[in-house]
Length: 288
Image 1 (cartoon, helix red, strand yellow):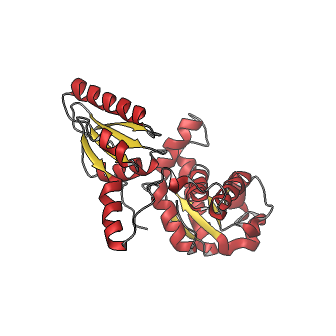
Image 2 (cartoon, one colour):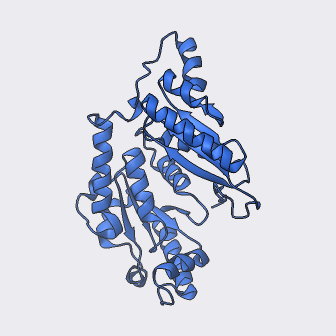
Image 3 (cartoon, rainbow, N blue to C red):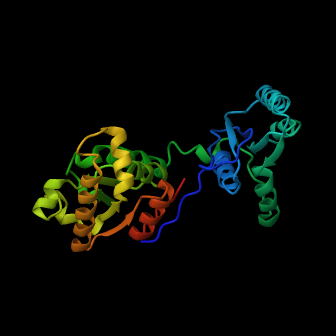
């Protein structure tokens, strides 16, 4: 399959010089501001020093944020970049007085939508995360518990409830992908390692045979796998490049033979892997 190199926020070959400071200011967790800011900043091959400032929900905290941003301006000699998702206008007005380059995501998107929809927004702090009693939130918690219980082939129970079962050699990215799918999308994802005993038998683990339609495979370049495994067990047979080549080759042959959909995780981010899996299993569950 063709793959593309995910763009890191701080490129491996970032140019020398001081990092530009970036603040993510929010009256909630700051995740929305940070996610959007990352998407924008990855388009620039520069170094960035990131600082999240969550729960700026009072005037006192807003003034403290301004003070900190201004101190950074004095130290760096450059305007800090400020991404903000402050719902209350009085808080946003205060932060805008800082000496940073300010981008207000709420004002940018909410005000035009108010005009288009002909309805005023609620301007309620933390509304997007106020879902503790919702069905979607409970589904997400249940999915996380399911993924933890079915990590690394720990359990064969309730596999009929799984939305997807990830298989692949050890350290090919199954666990982080399973948890990301559960946390972000409420997907119940189990994962099972393909091990040398499976290759000798030439069959999938017996507990998976009745659920082949739910299986999705992850592979990885042997060279990358050897690096990852050496971080875990340096100098072991498990991490040897020759062994990694054997396991990856056998796993890919098995997936082809069994008609299992699969992809290489070598240069894919967790977000990219999860998105491709969602497309394959055609899940209609909402994201957060």
